[in-house]
Image 1 (cartoon, rainbow, N blue to C red):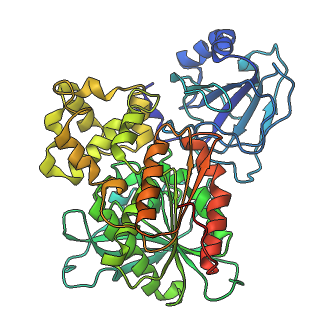
Image 2 (image 1 turned 180 degrees about the vertical axis):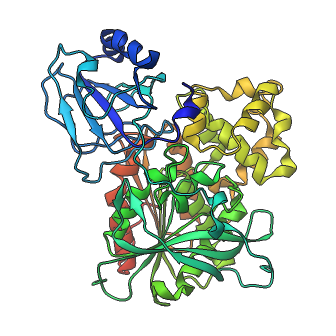
Image 3 (image 1 turned 90 degrees about the vertical axis):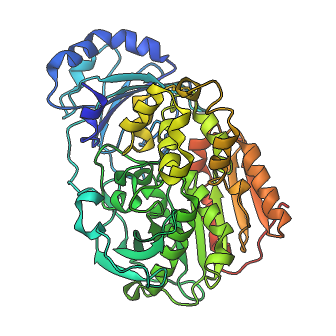
Length: 531
């Protein structure tokens, strides 16, 4: 079975967890049984995730490439099976929590064979094996397939008439609401506690053309009890892809075509923000052409999305409402790029605070961090994004034949797609000549256009940068340099460095700090600074 065959049914996952045992030992014990599943005993695609760890006791958050669940008590050496309505790993390192879901579980004592525990609706077929990078929790062993689908079909944006762009946009003000519809939103099969709308709004894309972008506006069901009007938070997900299925507007409706995206993983963060009582606007800031790294499109898409949310009468956003911006990883990259242009593009917006978590401050350093690792295929999606956003750069000229073939095959992928297709890909193997990608001043110039560290401007509001010191995808040095850049512009910056974890774990470990920081900014409290 090919990986492409399983992308339609990422709806259940069987997790096998063995404390204090190596992945190799686990697989060796069960190889005969797994081989029988592979040879045709299953009905449709399935998923098995085998986790080994040197720590027998885990808390409610499982830190490990895209899987969250509640722990079942065990003694060392006793494997446990949990069949749960969740999703397989986002190999790019997206970590999420189970968000309090009630998970059906089953366990068995050591000595039973794997096929003896498949009676609870999770018979399987193994389709791919990958050993993931060691994290603070331990080695994670993944045998990827997927349990048969429960998900309600949501049409892809290109199949949804709401996304069709109207004509006659040029004369309209940026941020003008063009259309809207009421939607139901969800996070991991659980409804979000908010009234929600998709709005289509006018903005300008990365090439200076008037376009119609989509944003999702959410207003919590609970009344706002804080001082002053209900705040508005612009949350930028890490779209991390070049296809419409990677967009947050699709993910928030429960869209899972092709497998989980970074946007889907971050719906849990959106839930946390709603629980604070804040209204949210979540823009598809890459636009209808999914222009990953199109920096000017990011600026317009984010800031005009805020304008649209304020103008959208059903959301009842007060004109005096304080505004915050928040993003993690690629979402922090988009947030920083937009915030740095705020005073020149949308100075009327009362921006109170900005949160950047695991920020991709130097895109070149981030692409180097992915290259050669378990998620090395992400480099391909990045190159597609640069090629699409900056066609004048002719990125394909720097690639050999194999590289050009990968680009052509990945033009609608999210990062997890390419990571699964090309694990451990080294960017150097795609080069047309030695250094054409990895040591090329012309290409570096293009990449720096999407790097907050090398773009003009600084936010006009206080900034929190929270970052794991051991971040492997967004090196801490780049985050420190960005903080120094903002400090030099006279902006209060709080740089919160975490000695625990790395890029994926910090998304969750830094959440409480991010929420507290935004709450203080909305309450107009003085901002601390580490400058």
